[in-house]
Image 1 (tube, one colour):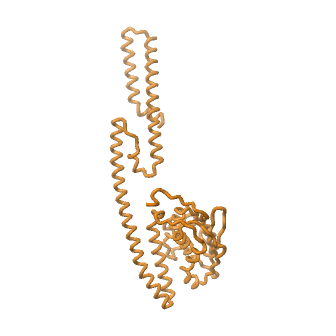
Image 2 (cartoon, rainbow, N blue to C red):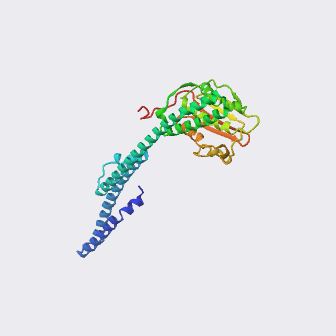
Image 3 (cartoon, helix red, strand yellow):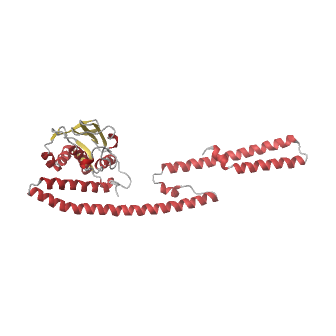
Amino acid sequence: MKKTQFIEEKIFFILMNITFLFFLNIYLYSLNIYIVNLIILDLIWLLIFITFFSLEYIKINKRYKYIKKLTDNLTEKYLIAEILPKPQTLEEKAYYYALKKACKSLNDKLTEIENKYQNYEEYIESFVHEIKSPISVISLIGDNENNQTIKEETRKIDDLCEQILFFSRTKNPENDYFIKKINLEDVIHKTLIDYKNIILKNKIKIEVKDTQKIVYTDEKWLKFIIKQILQNSLKYLNKEDKEIEIKTKEEPHSITLIIKDNGVGIHDYDLPKIYNYGFTGSDRKKTHSTGIGLYLAKKLSEKLNLNLKTTSEYNKYTQTEITIPKESTYIIKEGDLC
């Protein structure tokens, strides 16, 4: 608390004391008290006043700093009324009562929103699981009739359903974590299998090398992240000789998975925005992108302690790096085991 602010708040008290001292001096002077004695009395009064004033400031400033520290360190600010020190004055009690009522109202509203979100999440999961069954049947029909169009379109629908499902889980993905030792090559192989039809149809050269690495992370979330990156690579390959290179770079404590394509690339002014929600690029609207895939990949990477970085040169290449720990770095937080 600033001293000037404290003085402003106590200005009435200061003026009252000055006024009282002024009239006291006039009264005592009228009683023929020597001026020297009056000066000594004024000095004593001034010393007492400054001492009292300083002690009051120290006390209030200490209390102010304590409450400020409590507030700054509290993540869930709406719980501030529960941890504040007991109010001492009537004014503080009035403010505390109003704050407590406001916090309770906010807490009730947050609980209501949480319940609605939970219902929404359950509905989305149920909807996606229900719709996946007919998609699988249609895909099977496409396989039996060797209809590439049906197979490709059902894959697109399946990818969108997966995005919706993972999007609904991004608020608390830690509740769905299963951090374990996994073989990076197996995850890459499973991901490429999902896109084998489009790879063969478009005669895309896939070069995979040095991916037999062991990492610690959640397999399904990592596969989802790789799929979002691979989808973008496949979508924006515009050259006759289409190529995607997948390789790794080993560090002392991590493995960096590198996915590089020779596609259309990304403009310099678009590159910082590719992980923004809903961003599809300045000239990419023809691909019917949702702008959600890379956004989800970035969010999930942060939750999993992975580092996601993309570099690109327009009309030449796009390269995305996923840095994955070689050993477990996941910290169990309070509530993750619930």
